[in-house]
Amino acid sequence: MAASSAIASSSTAFINKKNVGLSAFSSQSSFSVQTARKRISKKIVSVMTPQQTERKPATTGSVKTGMTMTEKILAKASDKPDVSPGDNVWVNVDVLMTHDVCGPGSIGIFKKEFGQNAKVWDREKLVIIPDHYIFTTDERANRNVDILRDFCNEQNIKYFYDIKDLGNFRANPDYKGVCHVALAQEGHCRPGEVLLGTDSHTCTAGAFGQFATGIGNTDAGFVLGTGKILLKVPPTLRFVMDGEMPDYLLAKDLILQIIGEISVAGATYKAMEFVGTTVESLTMEERMTLCNMVVEAGGKNGVIPADKTTYDYLEGRTSVPYEPVYSDEGARYLKEYRFDVSKLEPLVAKPHSPDNRALARECKDVKIDRVYIGSCTGGKTEDFMAAAKVFLASGKKVKVPTFLVPATQKVWMDVYSLPVPGSGGKTCSQIFEEAGCDTPASPSCGACLGGPKDTYARMNEAQVCVSTTNRNFPGRMGHKEGQIYLASPYTAAASALTGYVTDPREFLQ
Image (cartoon, rainbow, N blue to C red; front, side):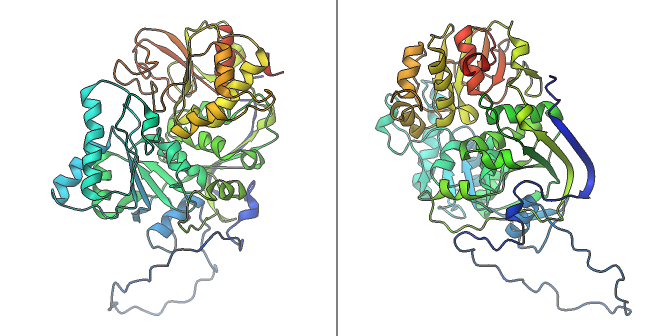
C-alpha cells in the first residue's frame, strides 16, 4: 500500500466546513473550565466622526464569520471581538519560555533596549529552563547557564529550573530537562492561552488547546519588557483523523504521514488544527508528539481542542484559571485533510528531510549503526514505555548501540520506577538492561541538536542512525555526513534489535 493511500479527501479554498471530530465542544457549548479571567473593557479611541450620508440597511443579513480556535485565542489575547487571517494584532502574552541557547541573547537585547536596570514585565510569567547544552565541559555552554542564573536572581524570576551540579543531575531538585516536556509537566501549558518560546518546537504546547509558537531572540527581548508581541493571524489547515489506531502505530507515525503528504513547506505560516476520533483517543503525551512536529511542515502553530484528557492531565499541575476555546461551526479553513488512521502503516522519514516519507518495511535493507531514543519528540515516559514493549515482546538483545536520553528528570524517574504492562512488574530500565541498551542518560536535549563534541550520544563520525527526534538534516545530530532515519519509538526499538530499519510489526504481531 502506498504511504499516501490513507488520504481520503481534501478540499480547498476558504469554505465553510462541518465541525467534524471534536464537535461536542463547539462554540455554542456551555462547557467551561475554572473561572475566566477578567475581561478588559473597550476603550474609547475617538470622540468625533465625520458627517455621513444616511445608509440603507444591508439586504444580505448578518455577515459575521465563525472563527477557528487559533483565531479565537488571538482575538481574545488582543482584546478584539474577532480577527481574520492576515490581520496584524498586538497580542498579550501569557507565558514566555527561554532556555540556555537563546536566553542569553534575549536577555542581552532586553537590557540594550530597555536599560541595564529594567525589570521584566511579569516575573511570574517568564519560565527559564536550561536544557540544551548542559552535561558538557564546554566553557561557553556552561557560561550560558550562569548568565541565566544571574538574570533570574537579579529579576527574582519565580520559575527558573536551575542546575549547578553537572556531575549528578539528581542533586539538583529544581532541574527539569527538555523545556517542552517540562512546561507541560510543571503546569505552564493551559487551554486558551498564548505561550511563546525561543525554540521552534514550542508548538508542542498546542496539544493543550492553546496558541504556542517559537519566536526569535529579538522578539523575546521585546516580550521581556512589554509582555506583548505583534503577530499576523495565520490561516488554518484542518486535519481530520478518524479510525481506530492500530497497536503498532504511534503519534510519530501520524505526523510523519502528514508531513510526507503536505511537505516541509506545506503549512508555512499556517495553523494546523487536529481533530477526529483518533485524536480524541490519544493521550496528552501523544498529542504533544503530534503538535511537536508541525514546525517541520512549516507550521506557525499546532492545536488540539481541549477535552477531559486535557483537564485530567492539568488536575493538580496548575491553579491558574483558564478558559478553553473551540472552533465555530462556520469557521473557515484554508484546506481540510482527512485520514483513515486504521489503514496507515509504520513510517520513517529518510535522510535528509522530515518529508522524505517511506514505509518502514520498504527500508528493511538499510543497515544502521545506532539507535537514539530521546528528545522533546520521542523522549517522554510513554515513548520509553513503547520501546520497552518492543524489547519485551522480542526477548532479544539489541544488535547496535542504543542510546536512551529521558527528556526530563521526571521521565528518568518513571523509566526506573514504573512497571511496564505485561512485564510481570519489570521497569523500563530493567528491560533496557536485559536488551543490552546503554544506561539511560542524564535528562536533557542530548544529541538531538548535535551540541558540543562531548555531548552524550553525539554522532562524531558518519553513521546511520534511527532516531525518535524531529529533524534529519545534514549535521543535525553532530556529523555533517551522518544519515538519520526519523521514526517512532516502536520502529526505533525494532530497528535496534535487527541492525536494520525494521517495521515494528515484526515483533508486535
